[in-house]
Image (cartoon, rainbow, N blue to C red; front, side, top):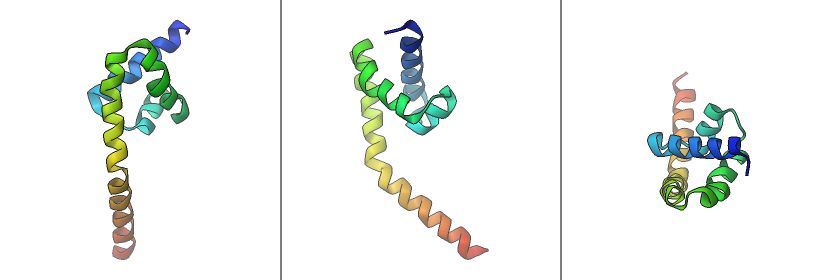
Length: 85
């Protein structure tokens, strides 16, 4: 694996550990696609550092667990805003 990829993966991992942002937010700040971030954090990070991978995976699992709640809240706010106008 090229050194620039390893650095990017580590940067993404530390960013998610510090901020607990979503894959979409990480992709935006790192200027890469969501698919790249997903592959970095699920496949490449496991090869680079297993301990960091375990911590990152816990955060990503939490995001999956609350995804339906975030989506529902977003939809609720959308329609409340439409109703108010």
